[in-house]
Image (spheres, rainbow, N blue to C red):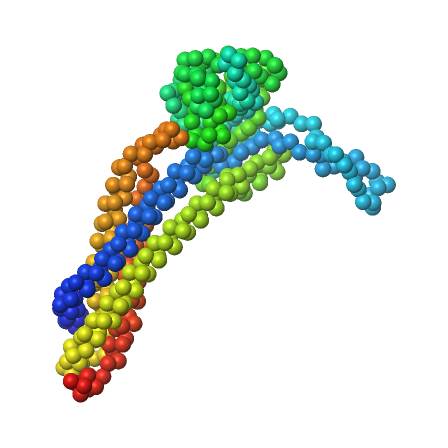
Length: 420
């Protein structure tokens, strides 16, 4: 313990004798760590926001009937042609319904599964929105509003209305904000829908739906599940989609395959449906880490240069230390401890600056029509970034001081004194 205190005392004396150089080295680490914290907090917060626009509204497993050609053509069933090559042109999709067969029993079965947080039905149909002489192509989805809000944060995308308000009005509609602007409609107005069968139905606007994605907001609207079934002239068993939310998203791939095989339906997991978003997030995080680590490496080179120069300036001190009984290892530890002290002080200051700047960014107003629920810039205050920052600061400064310290360890005090 006494040896350790002596080493620290000598290191402190060296650092305080060159306050300017020590401060510059520490500031290099400070700004490197601060930039790392700010960049990672802001970039991961932004990634969470962008991915949340899609992933929060995307079920972990989406079940539906996919229209596809029949793989078993009559020619392949004819035994006399079994060993011949079949060339069949203009294969048409097989006749099928968009309706999921036995949808309600499937939903009940899934909701009893311990790994399932919730399975809810939907009815989707294409329509035309009409207001006066204006007609716009659209998609209306029938939902259970409260369940959609519980499982998929549906309420975050509603403007001027509530899920409860839609549930209580079987003649109500949450109209896409893009379509509403094109037709100059406001809450309380009525919009007429032309159904695929040529019927017309008038619905009252109880709110607007805004996802932040223009292509969706121009066409997508929501009504009650029963209202959608009424638009299509179908009964309560008519379900076109089932959305499943799991307790563990990692189970989406195996469970989707099991559901598809068990019920003979198409079941798409969230990883398959949103692979491009996962790729984008990974690339953005990779760029953030690369830039931040580069800043810290540059700061490490600064420490290396400063300690290297300090060794040349402290040749006499090193010779005296060795002449008075300090070993080469002791001298090496003195210079390594100087680097670690610089790294620790600079790292702590960097964490403080990074946190303060992140708080400042988090309080800055960020309001846009595309993201109605976002009021400030998104920032992620994950403590792991602070742990990674201080650990990398200590490691990088240790290696930055290790090489000059080894040089100091090998200095021969006799040669220095003789040169004097």
